[in-house]
Structures are given as structure tokens and as C-alpha cells.
Image (cartoon, rainbow, N blue to C red; front, side, top):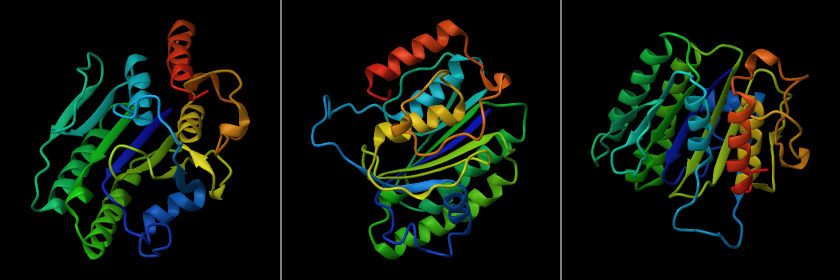
Length: 245
């Protein structure tokens, strides 16, 4: 089992889910689920919101899988003794070039040996100050994503998350082994987190079906379960504390 996660920071264009030029993004929307994320009225610790993509990446890395995380140099990151973390220095200027370099790095990386999780944190939209630039940026990102998709197999989960700042605002989740759900309304961050963990096979046992945006077809194959019972228990406790389950 593998997961490719792209997190796009900055305000997305208003036509994100309706622009037919975004061929690859629309393909993901067609085979999976997408929508806006509702925000709870209060947060227990609004200054330090947990990020579901980092928890997912950590779980893969801790299970011994080969993992890569490309992160902006101005973001605070805990050191990792398992996965590989590379910094990208984001500065105002040629934002398209920076994103292209990131995706080219990923393309070369996923061509290598078997891997588990790849997390790309893209900050270019933070420097796009007009709707025209935002639309152009997403079109370029869509084209580069298409090049990555050529190297993904049918056991790869793909998620695209949009964070204008820190909070999740929009999501796209897709995998070849799910029944498409299309646009889903009334979704919260915890629902996206629970669904991503479910699709990746990181937690055994029943998950509240009300939290699942997409469901795997059939039962989860034992060969996709890479965590020991102790590791899974630790992961479940951590996610439960965050309110994911």
C-alpha cells in the first residue's frame, strides 16, 4: 500500500472543482470524492492544529516504509529518524518553477525502490495575489501531477488537500479500489483523516462508518497491513486523542 499526498497552501481558485481544463484533478474527482471542509466553531488548541497528512506520513515511516516529505523551509518540522525530509526554500518570484522542481524530485524518487508515503507541501499559492495567477498556478500543478500519475500503481491512495493557512478548506481523495462518491457535503477534517487512514489500511477493525467519505471495495488484504499490533495500538491511541475516531 502507498499514499501520495499533495498539500497546497494558499487560497485556491474559485473554479477549482468546476474548471474542465484541470484534466488530472478532475480524473481524481471522478474516481473518488471531493468537497469543502466545514470548520468546527471551536478548537481545543487553535494555535497548533494537528495535520492529518503528517500523521499519515509518520505512520508509514514508523512502520519501516521508505518515505519522502518535501516541506517549505519556513515551516516548523520535528526531526525524523525514519523518513526522509527535504526542505524547499519558498520565496516570492518564479513560483511555478519551485513547484516544478518539487514534483520533478518526487518523480525521480518514486521511480526507485518500493516506497510507502510521499508528502509534498506546496506553498506557491501563498504568493499568488490575483485570481488569474491562482488559476494559472493550479493549471500548471495539474499538468505536473499528470506526469506523476504515470508511475502510480493500483494500490496507491492519492489525496490533495488545500490549506489557505493552517486549517483544511478543500479535499480530494481517490484510489482505484473504491466506489466513487463525487462531491460530498458536510465533511469535517476528522472525516477526511479517518477516511485516509481507512484507505491506507493503517488501522484494523471497525471505523465509524459515518466518518468515512470513501470505503474500500471488499475486505482489506492482509498483505497491506504493515503495522504490528503494538504499533497499531499506539497509532490508534494517538488518533483517538486527536478525535479522528
